[in-house]
Length: 312
Ligand SMILES: Nc1ncnc2c1ncn2[C@@H]1O[C@H](COP(=O)(O)OP(=O)(O)OP(=O)(O)O)[C@@H](O)[C@H]1O
Image 1 (cartoon, rainbow, N blue to C red):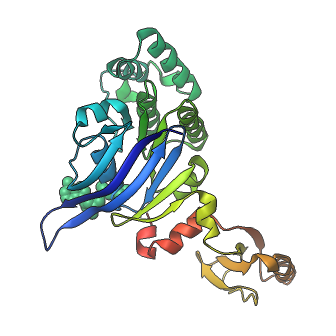
Image 2: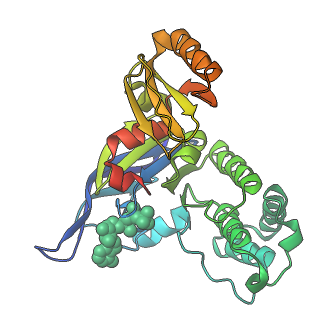
Image 3: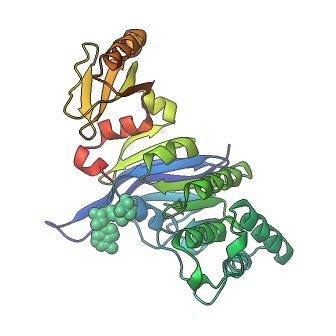
């Protein structure tokens, strides 16, 4: 597959010593046509700084950014044409309707008028925006405005499509519709860079992940590669009555999430014993309910990133 975005040794520092912040401290990553790369990281990890450099809004201190074989640092104007972006903050579209805003951006990005009209309608339907298509923008909700911003990035997509927290404020049903359209963008040949700190969503939407921490790449790979680093263990989740602390002899470790919810880690080979133990504890009234499940990307993320930062 053709490599659309390549970032090598990207450095960006803000401010001066001793208060300097290394927002990007030597980042390498790449995204191919047809693939979705998730860029995951806590607040302040350096995600937006990276995106702003890719689309020429910030100049790196050091490093290389190549976008569809073009040196994006030397030619930021070309980079902006090659990439379509849904920024973290919605572009104000006051005075327009969602449909007009989507069509307008499609035309500004050089789309053929007939194709832009067709594609705008298609996105409106696919994202279930029909009831608001012709509503003045100042009267639509935050979630509808966010979906409109997504459609504005997707109507005449660039070779690279950058989506910065596209599902903020969007309801769960329309989130799914958005993920389908995101996949469609990749299937149609775009390279998609999805910026998020929502680990659970990223897990289902992306092909590869890069986890950033304080401007550095902490880990990268597919969800399966990242979760395999956790070893052959499973989660045993327990709901207990108040004031009961479970003592499972099979648990490798145990974390409480609130007074009645516990997450234990058990070896996969002992799953049957763990279920037998939990069933018995439930009969004795020491557990209300339990569930056993594979360890998730969220578990990897929490193990990699220090707890105070992973609260994002
Ligand atoms: N213009 C700026 N001047 C000074 N510091 C900045 C500037 N922009 C970003 N920073 C700092 O650089 C670091 C990375 O910020 P950045 O916005 O890239 O993080 P982020 O991962 O996008 O965070 P979030 O998820 O909260 O949007 C932070 O410490 C931030 O305070």
